[in-house]
Structures are given as structure tokens and as C-alpha cells.
Amino acid sequence: MERRVHSVKMPSGFKCVMICIFWVVLVIGFLLFSRHLIWQPVYRSLVRETHHQVRNPLPTIDNRPLLVMGILSTENGALRDAQRSTWLSTIHMLRDQLPFRIIHKFLLDRPTNDTIIENDRYNDIVFLNDTRSGWAVKFGYKLYVWYKYIYENYPDTLLAAKLDDDVFLCVPQLLKRLDELKSTKLHYGWKHYGNTVKAIDEAFVVIGKDLLDRIVKREYCVKVSSTCNDTIGLVDRNYAGWSMGFWLRIYDDVDFQPDNDRIIMVKNHTLDFEKRVLKNIKPGFCSKYVINHKSSAQVMKQLHVYNNISDAVTGSIFSGDIVRKLLPIPSLTKHHNAFAIMDKTPVCDNWAVVTTINYPSNAVKNMASFPNWCLVIVADTKTPPESIYLSEIEMTSNASKIIKYLSVKEQTILYPLLSEIIPLNSFGRKNIGYMYAIHHKAKLIWDFDDDNDGTVDLNDFKGLFPYVTVCNVSHDILLNPYPYFGVTETRTWPRGFPLQYIKNKETLPKLCN
Image (cartoon, rainbow, N blue to C red; front, side, top):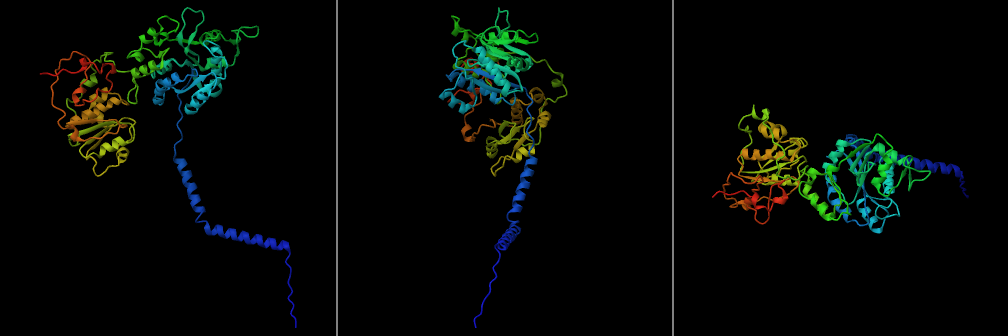
């Protein structure tokens, strides 16, 4: 008997619904099963990220006024390289210590392949896109274009400067001078004599924000016409400084500040041009002047050496001249013991001395690892606290048993005379470290900077230092004792010793017979 099987045909829509339900259940099941493997780690990561962001302090706001400098230059980059490697490098090095935030740009008429490559490297060139070139050809227009660039790109500018690429600036001396004179209506530089118009030479000219705003809002014109004159417009007289004098003479509130006594300005049409340029290039230049015009690349490098600015020095090169005498201060002559107080640190034959405001560098860590040396760290106001600093040194098994963190408070207690005379935030605080080492019976002192790694082998010092007696009477105010310290293969001199005297035998101490 034949059995027939009857099949019921499922509607196609119902089949689709069932397939969808199946996949939804499968996905939900997978997510529930894997939440510990995927979602919780992601969630924890997000929590950690949020927590990390909350802990980060907000960026500090730099409230120093902004100074924007434009340096008119040519296609030849030799002078630009000289400025970058001299006074511009000093600005970069001291950028956190200067009274201004500073932005500089070199101003070129138009781009070339070489200057485009140069700008890719330094990112400090602005192309004025001006086809006119040559000496004193529409310099007024170029000045106007530069001022418009500042107005549009740096609206918070307080002072706008324009200078030539053959100018050397004494940093930080010039910026201190501008800080003294700064105002929104300042007009500063070297004044041309004998003119009815107050004209500042374009080699270096600074104006304040209010004057900048007034200039860019007026119409520029090539020459006087029926539609443009000195009252309503900006007539270009080719020379930028001369043009500026006419642009500003309609205002009676300009803060005109010529500084001819501090600026060396030399015109190249004089017969003794080269002689006049070199006449003032000598040590101590930046203690008297703030700007030198007509500087070759070599002159800039020489002035940079004479200015002698480094990470640890913030003034002019030491000249040896007596500039002032200190009268006795009552607080230094009373209420102090004749001998410094002795702390509980054991004495040591060999002391290394360093002063720093940074966390322990490799140089400090290496010095701390030498077994036969004791180390004194002379702290300053910006140095990390003692507990944090010492924990970062990463002591090794060969580490010195004596590592002394000499806090500012301890310096004041142990050596009140020195602490009162030597200013804080000064490299000179290292002298207190020398006294500490001598006080703790040092026979040898290793003086090093925290950014200079070195090796110390006591065997190198054996037999090098015979005792000598130096006559007390000195015929010179400069004295360089370092040639007697055992180094014969090169000249040595103390930090700050005038470089022009390092070969002068008259500065060597006289030995008694």
C-alpha cells in the first residue's frame, strides 16, 4: 500500500523572519559570552584614558607680550645662517627667561628652489611676492606688506619689528631695553639727524600695536596724487624708515624713542666704511650697545663670542673692570659665627660638586656610581625636592656612600654669608658646594656640569700636583691659576675668564722661590 507523505510548504516571508531571529539570538549570545573578553578591557581602557587626562595639568598660559620680528633678506642665505647661529640661537636658548615671546621671520621678495628648501628646513621665511627688487626700491611697500602680515596672523602682537639681515642684536640686552620702553604707541630705533620728519632708520625699527593697526587700515600708494597723500594714505618714498616717518607724523601721540647712543649705525657710502664697522667690534660691546649695523657673518660670530651667553651665564663677558664696590652690610658683619656650622655628614677625601635645577642627569647618576667619590648636589629654588631627586638617582651597589643634597635652607644655615651674597637662580651657587667640600676635608674636588658626562680615575691624578707657593703680591687684577693644575696639552682657564687674555702670560700667578 503506497504511503504518501504530504509536505507543507512554508511561506517565504516566515522563513526570512525565522532566519533573522536565529542570527539575532546568535549575536546576543556571543556578546554576552565575550563581554569579559572584549567590553570590560575596552571599558577599563577608556576609564584609564579618562583618568589619565584628568590628572594631566592644564597647559600654562604665557602672558608675556609678543614681539614679532621681520628680517628683510636676499636670496643669498649666508647672513641668514649667521643670524640663526648667533643672536637668534641665543633667543631660542633663553626663550623662557626673556621678557617677550618672540617670533621671527625672514622676508624675501619671492621664492626660489633653494629658498623653498631652506624654508622647509627652518620654517622661518615669509615670501612677500614682490617682483620689484634692488637697493631702496619700494622698501616702503615691503614694510607695509609685512605689517599687514603681522596684523592678520598675529593679532595679539604688542611690538612689531623690521630689521635687515646684516644686523646683530645683543640678546638679552636689547630685549631688556625694549621691555623698559614698551608701549602700544612706541616708535623705536636709530634716528636720522637733521630731518624735519622723525625718521627711524629701517635697519632696525620697532612700533607698537596701536601704530601698527593705524598703518594697515590706511591706503598704500606709490606717490602723492589727488586721491592719496600723507594725510589720508601711505605714500611710498622707497626707503622704509623715511616712508614711516611721513606715515606717522599726522599723529601727535607717538611715543618716539630714538636710541642712538646704544645703536651702531654705519652707512656703506662712507670712504672709511670697513674701518668704521670694525672699530667697535671688541669685548664688552654688548655692555655698551644693543645693536650693530652692517655686520658681516664673521662680525656676527665674533660679537656672539664676545657676548658670551650660555645656559649658565646671563650677562656680558667678564672684563675684569671694577664696576662697583660693595659697602659693608650690617647683616653680613653681625650675628654670624666666624666658622661655619658643621653638619653630620662624614668627611671625605674626594668630592664632586654640581649645581642643577633639573632631575638627575646621566652625568649626575654616573658620578654617584663612582665608589671613591662623594657627591654634593647644590640645590636651587627650581631643583626637584630632595626625596624625589635622590630617588631618581638609581643607586648601584658601587654607589658612593655619601651623596649630599644641599638644600637652599641648609645653605642658608651652614653658610649664611655666601648664601646672602650669591643670588638664587644663579650658577654662582656652586661656590657654596666648593665650600661644603672644603669644609668636609676635601683633598680633591671634581667640578662638573649636569649636562657633561665624564670619567674619573684617581690614578690619573697621582703625582700631578706638587704643592707650590704663590706670592701674594699680584701686579694684575686678572689671575688665572689653572695652568698650574696639571693640564699641559691645552690651555685652561676658569669659567668667565676674558677670552682675549687666555694667552697673556701676565695673568699667570708668580711662584715664590
